[in-house]
Image 1 (tube, helix red, strand yellow):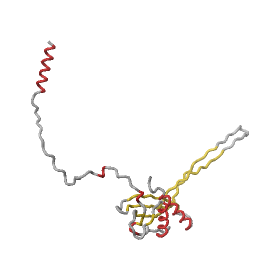
Image 2: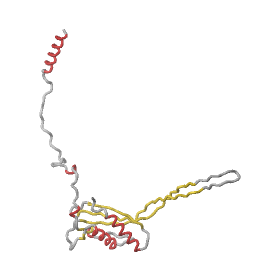
Image 3: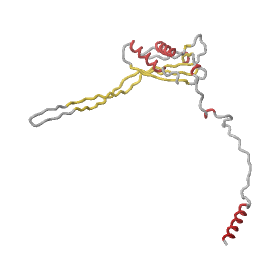
Amino acid sequence: MSRRFYLLALCLGISACQSNNPYTASSRPLPPAPLQAPHGPDMSAYPAPPRDYARYRTWAWVNDQLPAGTTWADPAQLAEVVGNALEQQGLRPRRDRAPADLRVSADLHVEKRLRQVQEDYGYAGAYGGGPYGNRYGMYNSVPIVRTYEVQVLVVRISLFDAGTGQPVWSASAETGTQGNQLERADALREAVGRALASYPPS
């Protein structure tokens, strides 16, 4: 009995599979692409090729103008310090109005910084005897954090591709603002050298 039942169920299942499909296939053309759709591959979706810094050999100031000076350093002094530091990195100023590979800008300004100094004030105990027995002392310290405001000189140097105008590299460094004129000139040279020490990026 069970065998006949299974055969009947199998036949019904096969006949159900052979029934007409109520769904019919239809083909319609795709709608046209919108006007703002790109007609080629989107190159912004791909990583930019690595920049070849070796091809940059010469430089000139942005808009062929010296950087703006401050009361701390005049434009000629800042231009000389930056030019010497660029030469240390293998970049030469352009000659005879020839096209430059890079355009350079330099900015010098004073900013405020908060500094914190921790000072430990300690007290010491003693050990000794007395009429009421021995006494023990202790040593401990109490840290005191002092916050004060200082002024620093910040120099920022930016390099741009002379052909495309795109930014190539930028860095900044800071130094103290104290000292006489000679000490401040040395501090400016040191700050510019630190800013350009990371060029070209590895």
